[in-house]
Figure 1 (cartoon, helix red, strand yellow):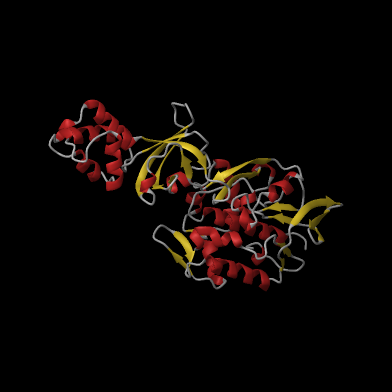
Figure 2 (cartoon, helix red, strand yellow):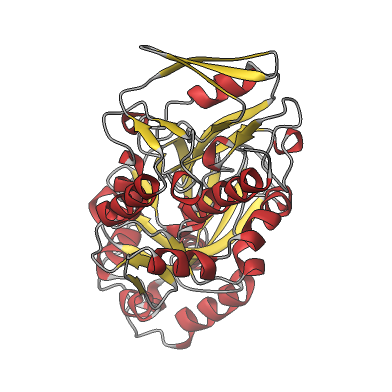
Length: 396
């Protein structure tokens, strides 16, 4: 839709599988559409899964920065609001406003939008493409695959773009769920659903490994079946079944220093209640109570009654509470798909396929996935805008 709103409509056709375009946008940002942010180019690129993704996206993002995107929407009649955290939303706080703006832009460009037009095949013959739908066939010299990934199938992004890309010889990096919560084995904290921890330090381990493969810090949210929040969502692209996650229940930048300080805190005043110290560390009441119960300690237990073993166990739970992953959220609930069309087979300066001239890729169908916070939609806008710029320069 962003591409359609940025290119001359002469002989431009947008084929939409669903009855209306933009259904996936309506789900973004909790229905409010966090459409971009205020990051600089360097900060923006650091929020993607791999350096190769950042390197690939750089030309597109320099061509349409976050600031340029905000200006584009302002110029097209959409008032925006910027939150304190730098996230950008439509002033209406309704994703429909973004869809309406893009649709207006496409129609002003005289782009033909055909809905309920499910593509079944794409073939190239004698330099032009034949696009076959369930009801019609079309010919074109240029084709852009902007189908999204596999997340939220109900909106139309069912992974068919990968099939089209593979039919032209493109390698597909195995798609997996990203920006999704995780379900846990033997989860004992379901009663805490809705509560969160500020700036939890989380270490990520493969099943049976002693060496962590990742560490990160951020807010963690308890759900009915597991954990979520930015520190989980942003790292879900890496998480696998049976991984072990060790999360601090208190905000700390250095677990080893915190371990020393906790020992001192529990030993300094034998008459003080353990529960009082735990809550003073920032652990909310419900979690503090569950921690003590798990160690068979009463809510009135005094620090002086803690033997060395119990004290060590409590400190370990505060700094390295173990969560065993049962599975990630299904594609039906994952906000983004990690994986997709191999970036090495796409020209990052034009988004054109290196394997088939005239074929382009935009957005999530590519092997790019960013953190939560408007990164993925901005990447879609920037890659689409780069294609628009490329096509404007090419022959008509």
